[in-house]
Structures are given as C-alpha cells and as structure tokens.
Length: 213
Image 1: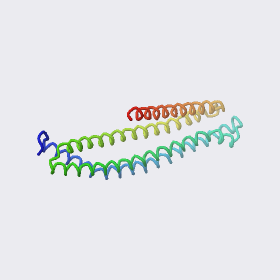
Image 2: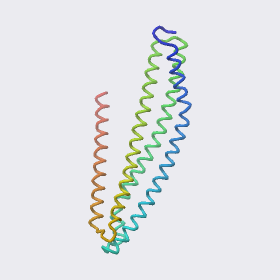
Image 3: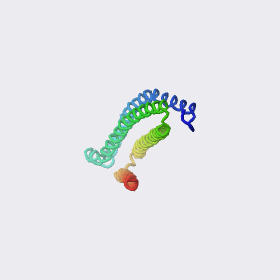
C-alpha cells in the first residue's frame, strides 16, 4: 500500500460509492415516478383552474356583460405562460435524469480506475481519482438541490395562480372587470420579475465561466 494512504479508509470509500451506484437505479425509478406524479399534478391543477375560470366567465358575462370570447382572449396570456412553464419544468426533469445517469457512469468508470490504481500502487492517480469522485458527488448534490428548488418554485406558482382565481370567484356578484385586469397585471408583473431574475442568473454564470477561463 502506498505510504500516506490508509487502506481501510479507501476500501470503505469504494464500498460506499459502489453501494451508492447500486441504489441509483432506485433513485432513477423514483424520479420517473416524480415525473409521472408531476404530470398528474399539472392535469389536476389545470382542471381546477379551468373550473374556476368557467365560473368567472359566467359571473362576468351576467354581471358585467363581458362576452365569453373576450374573457377567453383576456385569459389567453395566462394560459400561454403556464404552458411555457410546464414545458420548461418537464425539460428540466428529463435533463436532470439524463445528467444523473451520465454522472453515474462517470462514477463507475472512476471507481474502476481507482481499484486499478490501488492494485498498481499509483499514489498520484489514487489522489486524483479521490478528488474526481468528490467532485462528481458534489455536482450530483448541487444539481439535485437546484432541481428541487425549481420544482418547488413551479409548485408555488401554480398554487398562487389558483388562489388568485379563487379570490376573484369569492367576490361573487361583486366581481368587476377591473378586478380581473388587476389580477392579470399582477400576474404579468411577477412573470416579468421572474424572467429578469433568470436573465441575471444566466449573465452571472456566463461571467463566472468567462472569468474562470
């Protein structure tokens, strides 16, 4: 065994990471299940919002004489924005799973090299493999937290939109067109704010990568 390297610690590390790899199949299955549940949640949220919008349409048609097709036209921006967000999140989940599978293969290859280095007593390569394994694990954890955060953000947006529509519905016969317009203005303002934050993040990442290069 090369001097300065604890055989038991390294063997334990290899055993731990191999066990982690074996459990990744279950992790991927879980994420596919999350994807399916995500699809189901979207469908249920849509159904609930469509039901509320139908009631709002009828209230405004009777109380404010707003034509139903004008109501639908007014709400089209919200519908389009939600469809775009759904596509983004679906792509996020798909990309995440593919990325984790690629990282798992990279980890397998690195562990294989690690074992070969141990057998041959190559101290420098052993240290490099250890560093690479830690880097892969760090990237996995970072990506997992990022995806979880974005999923929670999307979920919160869905809840907030549904609640806004329900708040309008709660006005009953007191509901006015201006109430609908105020809600839409608030929705659009928040969407613009989210886009601005996304652009700032992309710019920050691009600047960091450029400086690093």
